[in-house]
Length: 253
Ligand code: 13P
Image (cartoon, rainbow, N blue to C red; front, side):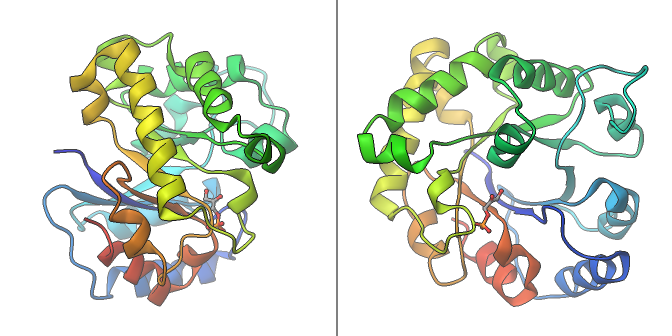
Protein backbone atom coordinates (compact mmCIF):
# COMPACT_ATOMS: atom_id res chain seq x y z
CA UNK A 1 0.00 0.00 0.00
CA UNK A 2 1.38 3.42 -0.95
CA UNK A 3 2.18 5.88 1.82
CA UNK A 4 -0.40 8.66 2.20
CA UNK A 5 1.44 11.84 3.12
CA UNK A 6 0.46 15.26 4.45
CA UNK A 7 3.54 17.38 3.81
CA UNK A 8 3.90 20.95 5.01
CA UNK A 9 6.13 23.42 3.23
CA UNK A 10 6.66 26.41 5.48
CA UNK A 11 8.79 28.12 2.80
CA UNK A 12 10.58 31.25 4.14
CA UNK A 13 8.13 31.99 6.96
CA UNK A 14 8.02 32.27 10.78
CA UNK A 15 10.44 33.45 13.45
CA UNK A 16 12.10 30.93 15.82
CA UNK A 17 9.45 31.46 18.48
CA UNK A 18 6.60 31.27 15.97
CA UNK A 19 8.06 28.05 14.57
CA UNK A 20 8.33 26.59 18.05
CA UNK A 21 4.73 27.58 18.83
CA UNK A 22 3.38 26.10 15.61
CA UNK A 23 5.20 22.81 16.21
CA UNK A 24 3.91 22.66 19.79
CA UNK A 25 0.35 23.38 18.66
CA UNK A 26 0.49 20.88 15.84
CA UNK A 27 2.02 18.08 17.90
CA UNK A 28 -0.54 18.53 20.66
CA UNK A 29 -3.51 18.65 18.29
CA UNK A 30 -5.90 15.86 17.58
CA UNK A 31 -4.86 14.32 14.29
CA UNK A 32 -4.79 10.58 13.94
CA UNK A 33 -2.23 8.74 11.81
CA UNK A 34 -2.70 5.17 10.66
CA UNK A 35 0.11 2.77 9.69
CA UNK A 36 0.41 3.96 6.07
CA UNK A 37 0.10 7.69 6.80
CA UNK A 38 2.92 10.17 7.38
CA UNK A 39 3.27 13.83 8.22
CA UNK A 40 6.37 15.54 6.83
CA UNK A 41 7.09 19.14 7.87
CA UNK A 42 9.50 21.00 5.66
CA UNK A 43 10.95 23.87 7.68
CA UNK A 44 13.55 26.59 7.04
CA UNK A 45 17.02 25.06 7.49
CA UNK A 46 17.82 27.06 10.61
CA UNK A 47 14.86 25.47 12.48
CA UNK A 48 15.64 21.86 11.53
CA UNK A 49 17.42 20.83 14.77
CA UNK A 50 14.64 22.38 16.88
CA UNK A 51 11.95 20.68 14.82
CA UNK A 52 13.69 17.29 14.83
CA UNK A 53 13.95 17.44 18.60
CA UNK A 54 10.25 18.32 18.88
CA UNK A 55 8.99 15.43 16.74
CA UNK A 56 11.43 12.85 18.12
CA UNK A 57 8.77 11.06 20.15
CA UNK A 58 6.03 11.27 17.50
CA UNK A 59 5.79 8.26 15.28
CA UNK A 60 4.88 9.01 11.68
CA UNK A 61 5.98 12.67 11.87
CA UNK A 62 9.18 13.70 10.07
CA UNK A 63 11.09 16.90 9.44
CA UNK A 64 12.27 17.74 5.93
CA UNK A 65 14.70 20.23 4.48
CA UNK A 66 13.47 22.52 1.70
CA UNK A 67 16.64 22.23 -0.36
CA UNK A 68 20.21 20.93 -0.43
CA UNK A 69 23.36 21.48 -2.43
CA UNK A 70 24.48 18.48 -4.50
CA UNK A 71 28.17 18.51 -3.46
CA UNK A 72 29.04 16.92 -0.11
CA UNK A 73 31.33 19.73 1.10
CA UNK A 74 33.73 22.40 -0.07
CA UNK A 75 33.88 26.06 -1.05
CA UNK A 76 30.16 26.71 -1.59
CA UNK A 77 29.49 29.60 0.76
CA UNK A 78 25.97 29.70 2.12
CA UNK A 79 24.97 26.24 0.95
CA UNK A 80 24.00 23.15 2.98
CA UNK A 81 24.82 19.64 1.75
CA UNK A 82 22.76 16.45 1.99
CA UNK A 83 25.32 14.79 4.33
CA UNK A 84 25.11 17.84 6.65
CA UNK A 85 21.32 17.50 6.73
CA UNK A 86 21.64 13.76 7.40
CA UNK A 87 24.02 14.52 10.29
CA UNK A 88 21.26 16.42 12.11
CA UNK A 89 18.69 13.67 11.42
CA UNK A 90 16.95 14.83 8.24
CA UNK A 91 15.49 11.94 6.22
CA UNK A 92 13.49 13.89 3.60
CA UNK A 93 14.59 16.72 1.30
CA UNK A 94 12.33 18.73 -1.01
CA UNK A 95 13.99 19.01 -4.41
CA UNK A 96 13.00 21.13 -7.39
CA UNK A 97 10.23 23.25 -5.93
CA UNK A 98 8.98 25.61 -8.65
CA UNK A 99 10.15 28.59 -6.59
CA UNK A 100 13.71 27.24 -6.69
CA UNK A 101 13.42 26.48 -10.40
CA UNK A 102 12.13 29.99 -11.09
CA UNK A 103 13.98 32.29 -8.67
CA UNK A 104 17.26 30.36 -8.45
CA UNK A 105 17.37 29.08 -12.03
CA UNK A 106 17.68 25.45 -10.99
CA UNK A 107 17.85 23.29 -14.11
CA UNK A 108 16.65 19.71 -14.60
CA UNK A 109 20.24 18.42 -14.63
CA UNK A 110 21.17 20.32 -11.46
CA UNK A 111 18.07 18.85 -9.81
CA UNK A 112 19.09 15.36 -10.94
CA UNK A 113 22.37 15.89 -9.03
CA UNK A 114 20.42 16.94 -5.92
CA UNK A 115 18.19 13.87 -6.18
CA UNK A 116 21.29 11.68 -6.46
CA UNK A 117 22.92 13.41 -3.46
CA UNK A 118 19.77 12.94 -1.39
CA UNK A 119 19.51 9.23 -2.16
CA UNK A 120 23.25 8.76 -1.60
CA UNK A 121 22.84 9.62 2.07
CA UNK A 122 19.78 7.39 2.45
CA UNK A 123 17.20 10.19 2.48
CA UNK A 124 13.97 10.53 0.51
CA UNK A 125 13.77 13.20 -2.19
CA UNK A 126 10.36 14.87 -2.39
CA UNK A 127 10.69 15.76 -6.05
CA UNK A 128 8.47 18.61 -7.27
CA UNK A 129 7.22 19.04 -10.80
CA UNK A 130 4.42 21.05 -12.38
CA UNK A 131 3.60 23.35 -15.26
CA UNK A 132 3.12 27.13 -15.54
CA UNK A 133 -0.23 28.58 -16.60
CA UNK A 134 0.74 29.08 -20.25
CA UNK A 135 1.53 25.38 -20.61
CA UNK A 136 -1.78 24.38 -18.97
CA UNK A 137 -3.64 26.75 -21.30
CA UNK A 138 -1.85 25.24 -24.29
CA UNK A 139 -2.88 21.77 -23.06
CA UNK A 140 0.68 20.41 -23.07
CA UNK A 141 1.04 19.87 -19.31
CA UNK A 142 1.54 16.10 -19.61
CA UNK A 143 4.52 16.41 -21.93
CA UNK A 144 5.97 19.23 -19.81
CA UNK A 145 5.79 17.27 -16.56
CA UNK A 146 7.00 14.03 -18.17
CA UNK A 147 10.09 15.86 -19.39
CA UNK A 148 10.81 17.23 -15.88
CA UNK A 149 10.54 13.71 -14.45
CA UNK A 150 12.62 12.06 -17.16
CA UNK A 151 15.36 14.69 -16.97
CA UNK A 152 15.80 14.60 -13.19
CA UNK A 153 14.73 11.08 -12.15
CA UNK A 154 15.31 8.61 -14.98
CA UNK A 155 19.01 8.29 -14.17
CA UNK A 156 17.87 6.34 -11.08
CA UNK A 157 17.76 2.58 -10.76
CA UNK A 158 14.45 0.85 -10.01
CA UNK A 159 15.52 0.45 -6.42
CA UNK A 160 16.37 4.16 -6.13
CA UNK A 161 13.19 5.51 -7.73
CA UNK A 162 11.14 3.41 -5.30
CA UNK A 163 12.46 5.68 -2.53
CA UNK A 164 11.33 8.94 -4.21
CA UNK A 165 8.13 10.84 -3.40
CA UNK A 166 6.79 12.98 -6.25
CA UNK A 167 4.86 16.19 -5.66
CA UNK A 168 2.86 17.52 -8.61
CA UNK A 169 2.40 21.24 -8.07
CA UNK A 170 0.90 23.25 -10.95
CA UNK A 171 2.52 26.68 -10.68
CA UNK A 172 -0.77 28.46 -11.45
CA UNK A 173 -2.28 26.92 -8.31
CA UNK A 174 0.54 27.78 -5.87
CA UNK A 175 -0.39 30.54 -3.45
CA UNK A 176 -3.17 31.71 -5.75
CA UNK A 177 -6.16 30.18 -3.99
CA UNK A 178 -6.90 28.47 -7.31
CA UNK A 179 -6.62 24.68 -7.03
CA UNK A 180 -6.64 22.16 -9.77
CA UNK A 181 -10.00 20.39 -9.73
CA UNK A 182 -9.87 16.90 -8.30
CA UNK A 183 -10.42 15.57 -11.84
CA UNK A 184 -7.49 17.60 -13.18
CA UNK A 185 -5.30 16.35 -10.33
CA UNK A 186 -6.35 12.72 -10.86
CA UNK A 187 -5.78 12.93 -14.60
CA UNK A 188 -2.21 14.17 -14.40
CA UNK A 189 -1.30 12.01 -11.38
CA UNK A 190 -2.44 8.94 -13.32
CA UNK A 191 -0.41 10.16 -16.27
CA UNK A 192 2.70 10.62 -14.08
CA UNK A 193 2.20 7.08 -12.80
CA UNK A 194 1.97 5.80 -16.37
CA UNK A 195 5.26 7.56 -17.23
CA UNK A 196 6.89 5.82 -14.24
CA UNK A 197 5.32 2.48 -15.21
CA UNK A 198 6.68 2.70 -18.75
CA UNK A 199 10.22 3.17 -17.47
CA UNK A 200 10.21 1.08 -14.30
CA UNK A 201 7.22 -1.28 -14.53
CA UNK A 202 3.75 -1.21 -13.07
CA UNK A 203 4.66 -2.54 -9.62
CA UNK A 204 7.18 0.19 -8.93
CA UNK A 205 4.88 2.89 -10.36
CA UNK A 206 2.09 1.70 -8.09
CA UNK A 207 4.35 1.93 -5.04
CA UNK A 208 5.41 5.59 -5.49
CA UNK A 209 3.47 8.24 -3.57
CA UNK A 210 2.41 11.19 -5.72
CA UNK A 211 1.31 14.26 -3.76
CA UNK A 212 -0.72 17.19 -5.04
CA UNK A 213 0.31 20.75 -4.16
CA UNK A 214 -1.28 24.11 -4.91
CA UNK A 215 -3.77 25.85 -2.61
CA UNK A 216 -4.67 22.70 -0.67
CA UNK A 217 -6.89 23.80 2.23
CA UNK A 218 -9.01 22.16 4.90
CA UNK A 219 -12.08 22.65 2.72
CA UNK A 220 -10.77 20.96 -0.43
CA UNK A 221 -8.34 18.32 0.89
CA UNK A 222 -10.89 15.51 1.28
CA UNK A 223 -12.08 15.89 -2.29
CA UNK A 224 -8.56 16.06 -3.78
CA UNK A 225 -7.07 13.27 -1.64
CA UNK A 226 -10.01 10.97 -2.41
CA UNK A 227 -8.76 10.57 -5.99
CA UNK A 228 -7.17 7.16 -6.53
CA UNK A 229 -3.78 8.44 -7.75
CA UNK A 230 -3.49 11.32 -5.27
CA UNK A 231 -1.56 10.15 -2.22
CA UNK A 232 -1.79 13.30 -0.12
CA UNK A 233 -0.57 16.85 -0.47
CA UNK A 234 2.32 19.28 -0.24
CA UNK A 235 0.82 22.26 1.51
CA UNK A 236 2.15 25.82 1.70
CA UNK A 237 -0.01 28.57 3.20
CA UNK A 238 -2.48 26.31 5.00
CA UNK A 239 0.35 24.45 6.75
CA UNK A 240 1.08 27.59 8.77
CA UNK A 241 -2.36 27.47 10.41
CA UNK A 242 -2.65 24.62 12.89
CA UNK A 243 -6.40 24.02 12.50
CA UNK A 244 -6.08 23.97 8.70
CA UNK A 245 -3.13 21.59 8.61
CA UNK A 246 -4.68 19.36 11.23
CA UNK A 247 -7.80 18.99 9.08
CA UNK A 248 -5.62 18.31 6.03
CA UNK A 249 -3.84 15.49 7.91
CA UNK A 250 -7.22 14.05 8.85
CA UNK A 251 -8.26 14.18 5.18
CA UNK A 252 -5.63 11.57 4.22
CA UNK A 253 -6.95 8.27 2.88
P1 13P B 1 0.21 26.84 -1.32
O1 13P B 1 -0.41 25.68 -0.58
O2 13P B 1 0.42 28.05 -0.47
O3 13P B 1 -0.48 27.10 -2.61
O4 13P B 1 1.71 26.35 -1.71
C1 13P B 1 1.87 25.14 -2.33
C2 13P B 1 3.31 24.84 -2.37
O5 13P B 1 4.08 25.47 -3.07
C3 13P B 1 3.81 23.77 -1.49
O6 13P B 1 5.12 23.44 -1.79
